[in-house]
Image (spheres, rainbow, N blue to C red):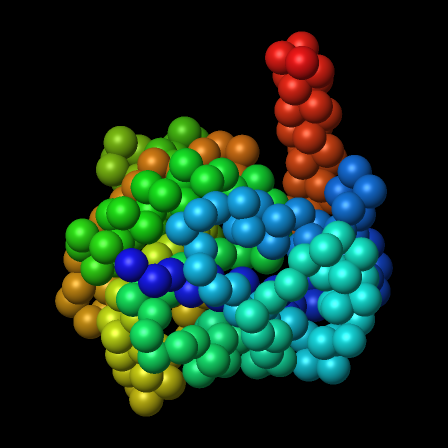
Length: 235
């Protein structure tokens, strides 16, 4: 089962540090995007890796993200105007012989080989699978005027993460249909759902956070410190 990973990392991501895109921000001395790519390369299930970067950043990514850490990708692609367009651009570079496409956010550096394995296995069986964790907060649904409409049963709610893994033909069809219909989405599984295809939820990890704010970056640093301390005790 051949798996190609697409890593969308083409956003500006400047909410953390002014004009610096967050993929270049250091996390314990190593760029955030580098850590994400290292985590994917650590999985034996990922056969090919396509990195989607901001247009014009190809050289910078090689110099700052890849080469200093001995990393390589199979293709580097300029992204589009939003996440959906960037994933679509990556899809165009996927080999025709790949069975599954794994999409993983460039700002999720703590993905584990175990979660990757579980999502890939589920997608191989079901055609589409998504890492997710149960929601712990009570969720409220509001109307456009700000008034509460409903309170869904928390036991039925999950927070989607990545990786999200799909049969290649299925994801291609989902993106083509969305493009034809003029639909924009930040979630690939939502595009697959529109086709009427079921998507299996696979337990992810609370540590598999997406780093978006400075608070997320601080939490990521705490996770790394805890891992280093645990490794020191084990050693």
